[in-house]
Amino acid sequence: MSDTALPRVPLPEGAPRTPASYDPRHDPLVAPHPGRGQAYAPTWWVASAGDPPGDDGPVQCDMDVDVAIIGSGATGMSTALFLAREHGIRAVVLEANQVAWGCSSRSGGQGQNASGRLKRSQWIARWGRDVALKLDAEIRGGFETFTELTREIDCDAKGGGHLYVAHRPKMVPVLAREAAVMRKVFGYDTRMLTPEQLREAHCHDHEAAGAMHEPHGIGIHPLKFTFGLVRHARALGVKLHTASPVQGWHTQAGVHHLRTPGGVVRARRVAVCTGGYTGQRLTPALKNRLLPILSNSMVTRPLTEAEVAAAGFRSHVFLTDTRTLRFYYRLLKSPQGPRLQIGSRSAVTGADATDPRHLKLLTDGLARKFPALAGVPVEHSWWGWVDVSHDMMPRIVQPDPNQTLWYAVGYGGNGVSFSTQAGRRLAERVAGRDAGRELFDLPIYRNALPFPNVMGLVESQAFAPFRRLGQRALYHWYWLRDEVL
Image (cartoon, rainbow, N blue to C red; front, side):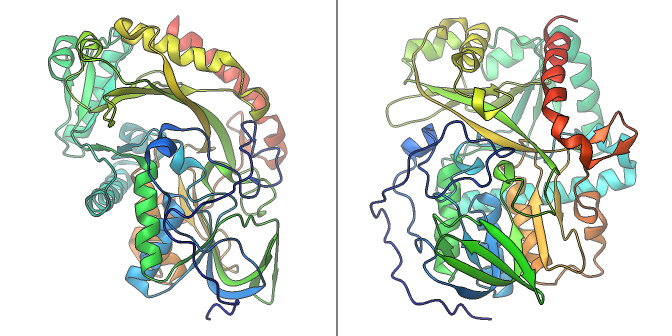
């Protein structure tokens, strides 16, 4: 079905915009929708990405479309790109605010060979060796999809793998066991580094008791990357309507009526790609299925040569430590000189997000890891919502076979690389190319996201409102386990 809206002149590259102000306290569990035309969060990525790609402006009248995609981040835009490139379907993308306003302009940009929060040894424990091997093949294929796209798009891609840093001596054997599983079961060239080897090749993290090096890993500028996806998709005829939040949704005679401020978009098929910014009222298919968690990030002013040398940086390989509430960090290149990026957990609620103690968590962490950089001024500080599923793994599914609705969410902070593979698979599903394929029997493609689990006994939607009480308690327990016990 073709788009029957009145023709509009697309905004040219770098056209001026007059966005609404940015709401730093936005909370997807409270707000009815992510706003309308809000400005970007003040991230380093926004400051350094250059002019945003052109778009088709807000929805201005009712229209009929074949496929509507909600969300213009990496998942939504890769879905649109692959629908057009591989299936000849030109989707219409609806974005509440600015292009890639949510996760894709706020993430750490760490493209790991992973998705979800479970390690490969945990895959084996949950589903058995055979399923784990098939899942690994799919995740590894996703990393290859991501790698190819980083070659197509100028996104400051830096290879070299990923360093998983033991922040205490007791974590070294834990990493060594995981490294052994990755070598013996999955065939990766994963190896352990001593603190001395980490210093010689990468950096002098004063907390590091050792590290596991994974050869697959690409650090990117996530907003440049998503801007590239937008440009490629729009070149193939994809329409992108910004400042067009879905504020109401009902289905009639198999057609989805998506109400935006400027008009109703009537879609035969809908794909939801809203990540950590999925509102509770968007669709019953996703209500209470995710726990959005805030992650804080900051980037320093340009470092001097002496500061870089004192911190021992010899590579741009990104790092993650073994805390449950992990720190992620890396040295960035910028036209003004190298900068350090570091991120970790943040507030439990949006209302508390602006409290200075959350930034202090990062500056204290930076000072512990790299004492020579203690007190270095911070030029960019922001936070963003991460879409964590209740069983710690993503889903790319059609939750109800009787509804032409699909979603791809739940990456748990590991969606930088796999979001593009999720978009490719979501495009296959929307195009009807998934029937009878064994691939789609994998856990991430087979079942809908679960509701919160109550003490491991029963899944219950009624438990959902109390998730944040449990989250506060867990944060205290995780701190004790990570730092004291």
